[in-house]
Image 1: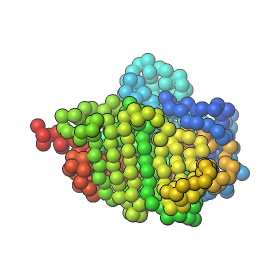
Image 2: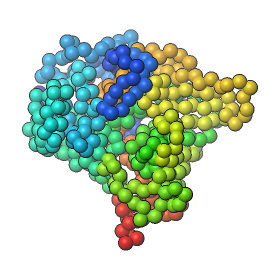
Image 3: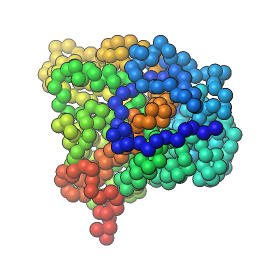
Image 4: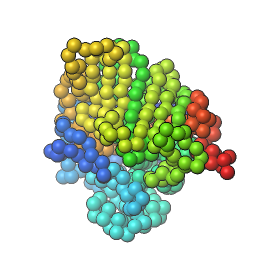
Length: 454
């Protein structure tokens, strides 16, 4: 059984979506593990159901959906013939199967994992057992050719593999793709993927799981209503561990950059410097990144971005800064308060009232922001698991296929995030000058820099 062909998407339909919706998974753990990442848990939640021939819309507010939420338990799953067939691609030793991207489908009753692919035989055997897939392949292209899956999960973390895997899935007729972050290595690769999705109508969603958190809608509403007064700037920091600098920009900074347009609009320009110690990075400092993300250099990075809204955005990362992941997130600073967003945490957002530039007579409270609003109890019982285990993201992808709209975190959004990454490189190559985005050159700025220096 196959899904009905998806009409070719128009450019207007492929623009970023702005609404968010909620769904489900249960756990009683304090911390939720997803792959090798952890998500701090404080709440619990649940979800509506879809079927292969007729999805129910996942759009709308959480307040409207909450009464109908129900756990997608195995014993209530639709017959396998009526479920979307998923194939997962990984690579043991080179990013594995990502942060739980291959197993999330076990928690979505409208899907069934039918096949996995991994060139490593031990890894393949292990993943087949974990996912309960009927078929296992050492060649993902052969898997796609034989299985013709409805959805392909591109799970391997190493970004240098994503372009070929995604293109194979599109060419194989997949109607949906769920891809581990970062998106791909170069804007040239991103352009090719976006064009291929445009031609085929394939819906591609990226695993920037915080983008699907329903509290973002409430946060947007609070800022629009004037909670922080006049918005002044956005401050972003990576994890600043051993990956501080360029690697942090790629691996963690992309989570933050993906959220920037939600609050500040499209990014239009960048100025940045990359340093090794207290010296500016030169072509001789360039090395290859650890996760297939291409050339990187230095141990600290400072970037400023301009946006359509006029609000500047800053990103800073210093290797082994001493605060660990505590600063991993972004702050929206206004004249009457701050909204603080912590990645992979629950609550994801806090409101800190009062002018941040004036002394306070008593400690300023950090007030949680739930999907219901500032200071309100989270109405979705298991929200942390839904976000951490990609349930919200997967359900949004299913709805995007049904509604012929872009997922909340689409290929177009992924390309915009990559523009910010490459913008920092391009500006540094130009001596920290402001460079306009989108960039005219679509290859990696450091590759061009090295070629010119040799």
